[in-house]
Every structure is written in C-alpha cells, then in structure tokens.
Amino acid sequence: MEFVLPYPIPSIFAFLLFLYYLHRKRNTSTNKRVVPPEAGGAWPIIGHLLLLADRGLAHKVLGALADKHGPIFTIQVGVQRAIVVSNSDIAKECLTGSNDRAFTNRGKSIALEHLTYNYASFGFGPYGTYWREMRKISVTELLSNQRLAMLSHVRESEVENSVREVYGMWVKEGSCMVEMKRWFEDLTMKVTVRILAGNAKMEADEAYRVALKEFFELAGAFIIADAIPFLRWLDMGGYEKKMKTTAKKMDDLLQLWLDEHKRRRNSGGVAPEAEKDFMDGFTLAGADTIPITLTWAVALLLNNPHALRKAQEELDTHVGRQRKVKETDMKNLVYIQAIIRETMRLRSPIQLFTIRETTEDCTVRGYHVPAGTRLFVNLWKIHHDPQAWAPDPWEFRPERFLTTHKDVDLRGKHFDLIPFGSGRRVCPGISFTTQILELTLASLVHAFEIATPTGEPVDMTEGSGFPNKKVMPLEVRLTPRWPPELYGESATVV
Image (cartoon, rainbow, N blue to C red; front, side, top):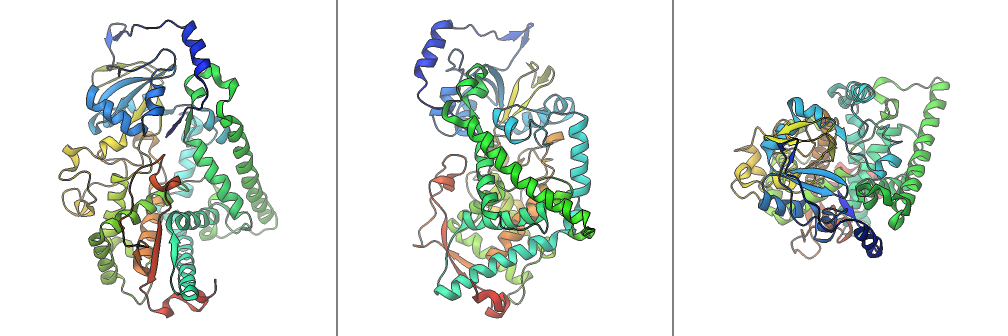
C-alpha cells in the first residue's frame, strides 16, 4: 500500500482546520467499553495522514508506533478509524472464528471502485452470496490441484522459452546482461496471458503490460479522497482520472480476449479440458507480486552466495545438467522451496495486509472494535518478530525452513508467516503462485550462473512499494550452466 498525499493542499486544509475545532477530545470508551489505545500525532480531520505520508514507508512508520503503543492500537485515517495489528497472535484472533466473519469485508477505495467494476471482482467484493459463489467457482474450476496440474505444460513451456531466449542473447553477444524484474514481468505476463486468454493473439502483449502495470500501481494507491470523501470532487493529483483511463484499457483488452473465446466456441472450436484457460472461468492473480518476489529472491541470493551455491548443488543432485527442471522435481527441491518462503518472510511484496473493515461490533484482545473500523495487519512487523524468528530475524536464512521452522508454510495456517493472508479472505491462488515462483527460480538458478555486473552486493534499500521498482533495476550477468544442446537449436535465434 502506498499513501499518496498530493500537493499543493495547505490552503484547503487551513480552511478546513479553521472550520474545525483545534482539539478534539478522544473518548477512550464506546458505551463504556475499552477501545485500543490511539497513537499520538493525529490532526483534526486528516488524522494520521501526514504521519503516514511524510515519514517513510507506512509499514515502518506503523511498526515504530507499535513499539510505542503496543501490538494493537488505533489510528485515524482521515475520517476513518482503523486498528493496526502487529502481532501474530492478535492477527490470528482477527482472522479466525467469529472475528473472521466480522472482518471479512474489504475496505472500499476509489481505485477499487473503478478498477474492479464497482467491486464486482470477487477478490475485492463484499462478503455475501455473490462472493461465496464466485470464490467457489474459482477454487473448484480454476485453482484446484487437478486444474493446476493440467496447466503445468503452460508454465513449463513459457519458462523454457524465456530461458532459451536468454541463451540466444548470450550466444549472439558473447555475454548476457539481463534486467531481472523486467525479465520476470515478461515471463509472468506470458504465462498469465496464455492462461487467461488461451490461444488469443499475442499482439496486445505490450498494451497488456502497460495496462497491467498501471492497474497495480493505481490499485495500491490510497489517495486523500479515500480518507476525506468530501474532497473527492477535487481529484487532487488527477488520480481518479487515471483510474478511469486504466480501467477502460483493461476492459478493452479483456473484451478482445472474450470476443475471441466467443468466436472459437461459436465455430465449434472448444478446447479440450487440458487446454482450457482462465478466461473460461474469468480470473487473474499474481501478475504483480510474482515478479517482485522473484526479483527479491535473486537479489537475496546474490548477496548470500553460499545460499546460491547450495541451491545449485541441490539442483545438480536431483535434476543434473542433462535435462531441464520440471514441476515434478519440486517435491525434491526443498531448499528452493525454503528460499521462496524466506523471501516471502523477509521481503514480502505486500508489507501491510490488505485493508479489511468490520461489518459488526467485535472484541479483539479484550478491546471493543466498533462496526466500520478498518484493519491493518503489519506483516513486516510480524515477519520480523524476534520471538517467532530467532535467531537473526533480519537475516536471510532459508535453512530455518528446513530445521526450526520446517512445518511453517505459506497457506495461512501459521500466523507467523501469512503473505497470502488467512481466514475467509485468504488468497485462493496460493498454489498457482507458489508453483510459478518455485519453477521459475529453480529454472533460472539451474540454467545460469548469476552475478552482478561489478561483483558488488545488491543495494537492498527499500523504496516505494518495492525497493528496486523505481529506484534501481536489478541488472545481472547470466552465464549458461547447461550443455549447449540442452537449449535447443532455436536458441541461437533472437
């Protein structure tokens, strides 16, 4: 989540502050029931917005407030009250049992209103009959283990093609420098388009990439009108206009693919079960978080060469250098799996759990939480908790998932590690995402030696959302490890 506070706005707030009383007494109880303590530094009307917008990454700002106010506290996001949870036990209390139902609704935002057909997308829609039916269809028809197994050839072939293209560049140039985030985005986009649109023409690849990038950048923006609704008409920074434009681009692309599906069906060209794609069930996931996670994983391996060598040794033992990695190999590649888990813990692409909002009064850790209160779960704080991740919670140590934390997975049952969420709203695409992450990383590490251009460590400084998203592309040198014939004859053609 990225808090966006456009400028200039001082005159607007000065007028609002003039109309508003300078100090508002905060009640510490609702109907004589104790509510979570409120963080200091709130302003009239805007609450803690300035604190969140001006002092760095929101998850770190909220983490510092947790050190001061405890693992559950209240903030004021404009006119909206929210609680911030920074402890796995309290997160579990919020996301299980009766509280899970109370916190099931997503918080509304202008971005989601425009980008998800007014919350018609089940991933962002309100809890109810429609949401339950859509989730049931997605899980049973699209994301079941059987369905995903049928699509393994799509993932394997696109990974293989991407590796072959890199080898072709190496043959042509004598060396190969690759910007990894762009490479992962290309690969993820190809897999996603093929799964989403099947045999639809790929001429729209670049348009899809641009629209999808804009979609995720805008979907993650929390603009000032979300916190102070009566300022929406001003459209500060032009964000709502951009959201409408991006929504139209995505709609046009989806319509293009849908029309091709209709033509194929009307002509009798129904795909066999193993070739059916996600447009037959209309869903999309992971197009942004997968490249981010993989880029982090490569950066962490480059800064920890012993872990990179260990991953290559595991691949050489269980796969060898005479064939390519298959998804069926993953059950034996436990260190690759551990690298993915440790990356998701240490550098989760989502550091603040997607906002939820209570539909009814509930009680958390003995505190009264009124209906309409929003929930932030600070994954960054939970995933670095010294009590849960000792020793060295800030260090990259995949080995912990083979020893002390070998039973901790990513599926939302272990609340010390919940990058995909938990409860009723847990991401239904966990298996789909982890399969792509593991296969792609294993194939890259198996096929190439990886190094930075100068041999220097990667700068891991965080930026907005993802550290290297805008600040520094992750460019690496790739050198083939396989024998040439394994890349295929077409590998020399770029």
